[in-house]
View 1 (tube, helix red, strand yellow):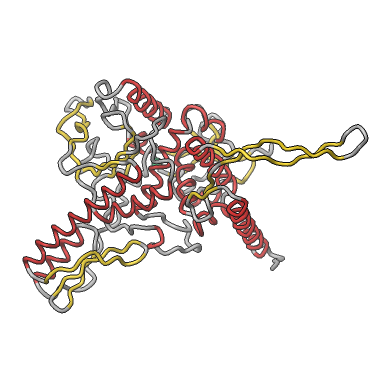
View 2: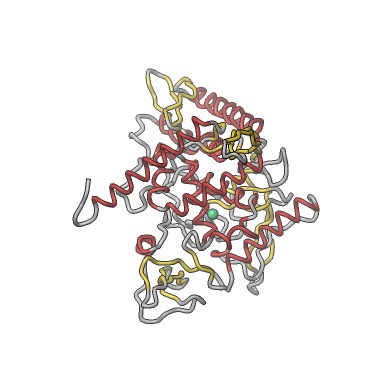
Length: 473
Ligand SMILES: [Zn+2]
């Protein structure tokens, strides 16, 4: 079984082929007979069934009208309060944003629909003009649904339709787009960019991850959000409390983080991750190819000094000891995801680490969230940090290029006297600042990142030291 590879291969073939040959020949989203949940999750943030429940109403509605207002707000991902005969509609996105106010009446609720539609349209247009991205429309046909017929064969059925994004979704995507630059751009195109779909049904019946990255019917890179995937999620990661004492450090459950993860897959496509890069960096990330899939290197070693290897046991959903070919080593206790994460030589940033590809996508997501999130990546998994920073810079350079500058150098002449001369060198035009956003590459911005990294590394080293029995400051 080679689940992840075949999906990757398809993705690349589909995407690349479609970009070359255009619209007409790329008509299918091709789950074949081997298509499985595991394959699908290779390109998605695939916590199937892990959607949080819709938020409960904060207070008991005092009237039928207020109840209707709360239902309207809740189903559109915004908040409402009633005060002095008015409805005040708001959105929490880092700070509380006052959207609009209407009369607390049936007519006021109708006005609210119009006002919200205007804001959605405005935000959507802003993102389309700023980034060149696009969004699904209400009722837009995405593809025909794949399902198994009575004989167990795959076939395509009814159209799967999409909807317009909601305002909270657009704010979450906006935050991700600003952080993820330039990974929203389609590979090899100066203008084309990702299209975002909000599905009203599953593309493959019964398969419902949170979101996936793949090419759409026109061969363009597309991110599909599945039904209910944004329900109850904070818009921005800072809206969710950061708690370094939690086992995951952070859940990264915001719409912003989910979008960043999926955009990371487009970044991977742009830098030739699946054809070239993955096999080169897998070892650096603590993974070993078993031929059929991937095994994670544990910190513990065998008598020969080789790291113990673990791979996912699909039957138990736990991690089992295996040999370099992926064959189970019997008699060893299996590890849960949390135990495996602790045991891993390079600690993944989240519980989602089925492959180097997904582990890396999570790492890039955290790097681009910046600040305390980026710091936790550097402190907990310096190897992943280094790979993510290096490859992120590669894409930035690919898009924004390098600047040339002159530097003085010296050599000794025949008499042993220094001779000074200027050498033309080049450096990246842009780098990613410690807050996650791109900045012009200057002495000051480079120093700021270096100081941030030094402080994080020093703090991590101090923490490690104070955790030893003899302790330190
Ligand atoms: Zn993914």
